[in-house]
Every structure is written in structure tokens, then in C-alpha cells.
Amino acid sequence: MPKIKKTEEEWKKSLTPQQYHVLRESGTEPPFTGKYVKTNDKGMYICAACGNELFPSSTKFESECGWPSFYEAVDNKKIILRPDTSHGMNRMEVLCANCGSHLGHLFEGENTPTGKRYCINSLALDFKKK
Image (cartoon, rainbow, N blue to C red; front, side):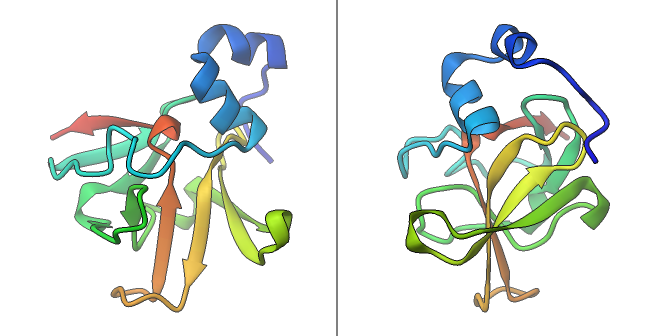
């Protein structure tokens, strides 16, 4: 269960309209438009809604899918995975365990060290540079 609980009105006040759409309405930003698609700086990607540490930059890789991709979360307790069959697909939705916000999706069977690709919206992330 998420630890941070806010009303939707409180979320609307603390997020931009675009962030609210992605984080609270499970939206998706257009591919190749996010600010972190090509970022290669060292640091930590955190939840844009609550600051929860999610993905270390050392697990980010170029997947050519149009969204920031990671092969491992900083800690599996920091995220929640939930089946998502929307849009006629079978995939796993990735949520922030701290606030319940939608981050993106997990795809398995990928050519990565873990066999996983966390495909995450830039709008769902902030970055703490090391």
C-alpha cells in the first residue's frame, strides 16, 4: 500500500497538468519527447510526485523505445508491479510504492543483464545528479 495519501485535488495542485496525466491517470508521454530519454549523467532517478528513489543511472540503457529504460530498480520494495491488460496488451504496470503513482511498464525477455526493461515516462521522474 502506498505510504503517501493525497486527494486528487492535492495531486493536481502539486503536479503539472502533464505530470498529473501520466502519474495519476496512467497516461503516457509521446515517445522520444521526454527530458530523460538521452540523459547519461550519473545519479538517481526519483519519483516526480514524491521523491522516492527508483532507478540508479547505472542501470539506464538505450533501448530505442522512446522512453527512459532501466534494467533494474534500486530496490524492488520501491516499486509495485501490477498486471495491465489495457490497449489489448499483456504487460506489467510499474507504480511508485511510496505514493502509488504510475511510472510506466515492465517488459521481460529483454536483452539486458536482468532480462527486464523498465520503460518509464520522463514526466514521472526527477533526477538527482551525483
